[in-house]
Amino acid sequence: MITSTGWIIITAILAATSCALVGTFLVLRKMSLMGDAISHAVLPGIVIAFLVTASRNTFPMLIGAGIFGLFTVWLTEELSKKGRIFHDASMGIVFTTLFAIGVIMISLFAANVDIDQECVLYGEIAYVPWDLWIWRGTNMGPRPVWILSMVLLINISFITLMYKELKTYSFSPQLAATLGLPVGLIHYGLMGTVSFTTIASFESVGAILVVALLIVPPATAYLLTDRLHRLLLLAVLFGITSAVGGYYMALWINSSIAGAIAVVNGIQFALVFILAPRYGLLGKKLGGRRVSKSEPESISHPEPKDIRETLP
Image (tube, one colour):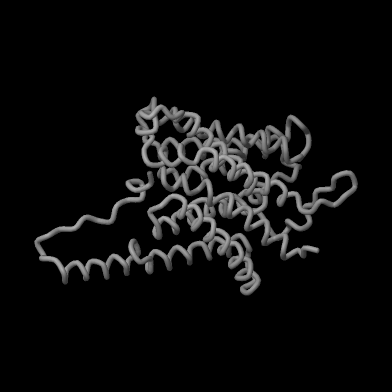
């Protein structure tokens, strides 16, 4: 029988793995903060789903949040394409406005209902073992584990089926369009998986940790490899080690589990940033010294190629 500790760690691993897989493509596309935008902007969708169904059933809230997640992506793209606004600025405008609307809707229409903005932001993974799914009188285990398992299966299926297309799209959307690939479908398919991963994860771990899990493990892996399949595997590995290490760090220092997982993510990144053999600070410094000893000073050497140049 799985203990409470086991369910918490399993939930953290599922969330970390799901986020790392889709977060890798956000990092490659320089869209890392889209996960942050979606995690905040879906709040009105959650409130509307509650008002329509008069219940806190997970499925309607996932649908409402998913619609607003895709709406956030679409509106951000439209503002940056048709307005004289950079993409990051349009993202900031959209998600702050939608999040504020969600907060106002809670205070006006759901003030007496347990839809807490702080819970959405910070989550509490320690409560997972008691959030049970009872089906026909049978205890099926924690509900978040089933939801995150479904999301992970969807993410793996999407990446497996669209691997070559995602690889080309990550390298260059223009090249993908020239080759006749359905760029719009790829883009919104990826954003859809990001939306549902974010929504499914932040109920348990909170929006802030979701953003950390989306960005930090792929960014850490980015410093160690130039190959997409290795990048995905390393991102998942760093996500899992941060989940497990963060849980035991939280027990050790008696702190928030989500906060400790985010801290372990940061520690892993810092170590790789310093020690990575090719792209780390020490690796670059030692590489520069070897070049200076073996080559004339007048010969300049380019920086290591960006991963987007070597992906295909």
